[in-house]
Each structure stands twice: as structure tokens, then as C-alpha cells.
Image 1: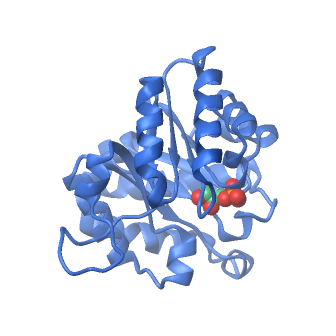
Image 2: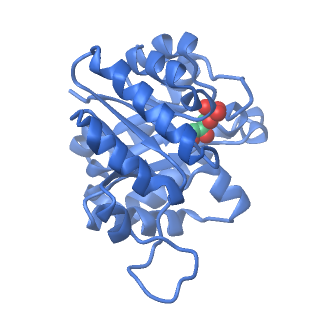
Length: 252
Ligand code: 13P
């Protein structure tokens, strides 16, 4: 049985004051009771990881943890601006997002680079959240499954059965930050396609991997999405900035 996992991706938002308010409010809300067997995490911008790590550790809820938004594919050395997996581990990060479409588009990240980042995370005991998804044009031209299959195929080639320790996030680009959520049926169809593709490689891996949905998830659509058999949780952008909305989605 795969646990339901809800991860907030704050992207380039937050401040020392607002982060503290958010974590205190969310921890307080969670202490009042959350559905059993779920895992939650929040991914702040890199400069805030140490602050958020300390605050999350202080509220000591076994099911609430910290994640990062990116990681270097390198171990250490002359890579100005990069952050290594060992640094994230020291800050008690449990997850790291790799290959978010914003990084694929704006920073020209390739599937190969994304797999290298995922390997670094795995080597340091951090769960990579590997993002895949098609653009509006790719969906409209009937190539959505083909595009996502090719993104996943590269991960299978590099990561092999270590994929069992990863999460995949299906985030259709046309649904990110647009308010245009994929219908639960459309998302389920793609999640199913991803799981079947993984099963072509290894049935065990396919049944273990959590596949999260991301793209305009809100408290009012989360219930329907999370009820789908192949949707194992969500990667939440805009709505995760509000502690109330994040808590409501975690409870969905
Ligand atoms: P929104 O929830 O704002 O659409 O963002 C989704 C996302 O990109 C999460 O990584």
C-alpha cells in the first residue's frame, strides 16, 4: 500500500517572517490530527532550508518533513551557485524536487541531467521527486503520453531499480499556475500510463513508486484527484503558500 504524500513547492517565495508563521500554523493544525499513514513535506527556497529545518524539527511530527527544490548532479567542487546532496542531507532534507518544468524550460535541464541529480539524491538517502509532464501544444497534438513516456524512459535507463526509491510527479505544464487543473480522469489516465510503463521494466518498481499529481491543486479539487487509484498525492505550488489551504489539501 503506497502512502499518500503531499509536498508543498513554495518556488521563489517566502521570507524569514512568513516562513515561521507558515510552519507554526501548519504544525499546530497537524497536531490537531491528520489522517493516518500520510506523509507531508514543504520545499522552501535554498536560503531558508536551515531556518525551516530547525522549525520543523522543533514541532517534531513524524509525518512532516523538509524538501529542497533542486540539487547539484555533482558531489562537490568548483560549481558556483550549486547545492550538493550532502548539504541538503545535513539540513535534514528528506525530499528534493528534480526536473521541475520551470527548470527544464528556463534552465534547459535535460532528462539525463535530471537523472544524474536523482542519483545524487539517492546516494545521500534523499528521495528525489522527478517531475514529468507535457506542454499544452504537445497535449493538443495528441502526443502527451509519448512525451511523458520518453521523459520516464530516460529515468528508467539511468536509475533502473533505484526508481523504486523515487517519487514521480506528473505536472502537465498547461495546468501549472494557470488554475486549469487536469480532470481527475485525465490525470489518472496519465498516472496509469506511467505505472504501466514502469511495469514493463519491473512490476515491483511499478507498484512501489508513488506518483504525485501537480498543477493547480486546490482544497476543492484535491479530494477527487487523491481518490484516483494511481494518484498517490500531490505536488502543490500556489496553494501551498497558504497554511490553511495546504492543511486542507493534506486532509483531503
Ligand atoms: P501550482 O499548484 O501553482 O499550479 O504549481 C504546481 C507546481 O508547479 C508544483 O511544483
